[in-house]
Amino acid sequence: MIKFCLLFLLVFNFSIVKSQNSITGCYSSNFAIIGWFGAHLKLNDDDSFEYLFFGDLFYDKTGGTFEVSRNNIILHFKQITDSLEISLRDSTGNIFTSKLPTPENNAANYRPSQLKIKNTRLIIYNRNGKRVRRKMNSRERWQKYYLVKHTCE
Image (cartoon, rainbow, N blue to C red):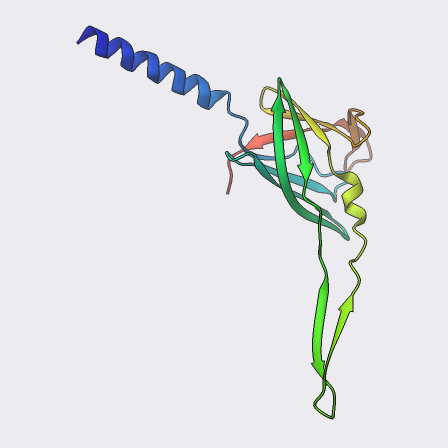
């Protein structure tokens, strides 16, 4: 009986430690950049993620996979292959198809390439590997910028 209790306590403690150290979940920017722009990131248990950057006329929703190396998260974004193909009938009944080119996604330039885990925060690194330390807030003052963990909705 004592062995069973010790085994139960040992397994219970490991499960608590594992759940507290889990990086999966939802993260959002700690404030809106210039009062307009925000970011959401959802890290899933299967090493996939969903990323959303939005505000004003920018909108970038994509996903991909991530890998964890020590306390760093390296993001690998999926290549976006959006296209629009329209099939229409003309007045004689013939069907013709028109394919529109893929629009340029300017918001893709603001995607993080790497994140550093620090407690419940994710520190952002741009595609050049440089840390994004501060962004301008709605009061036009520079403020520390990072992603904060919260409950998923």
